[in-house]
Length: 147
Figure 1 (cartoon, rainbow, N blue to C red):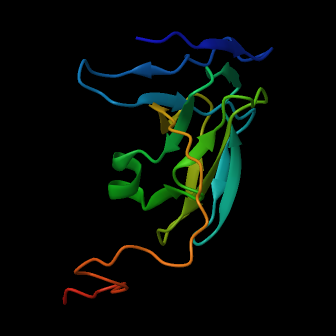
Figure 2: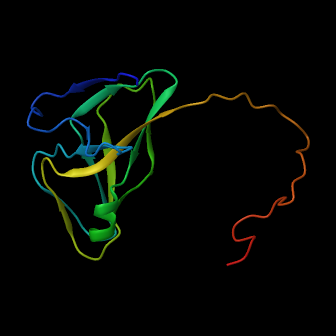
């Protein structure tokens, strides 16, 4: 298990820190730190602050992902999903929420709005080449195996 330092921004002590909601959860729930309710109209987005900063260790990233319940019940998702918090970022974490639904959706202070997963990052070195190994698939792209 790794440890990650977290800093709660001033005036956000009423907002819960990220936490796992069950013993088998992969992601920690994240909470809205809006100062007043924010309503996102259908087919629009807004940037929602979380009121926290974290120090992700080198070799890891924090991935910010949507919550399935918000998507299934309200059509709410995240743009730039999954969002990445790099190990050298020290600013406030915010999420870009999008209303894919057909009704306005309101976010209140303290609402669970996203989840955060910590993942190991593997750095690679790209090697320039004039050709690649052949495979059975080759260059078959979107839908190449049929519907």
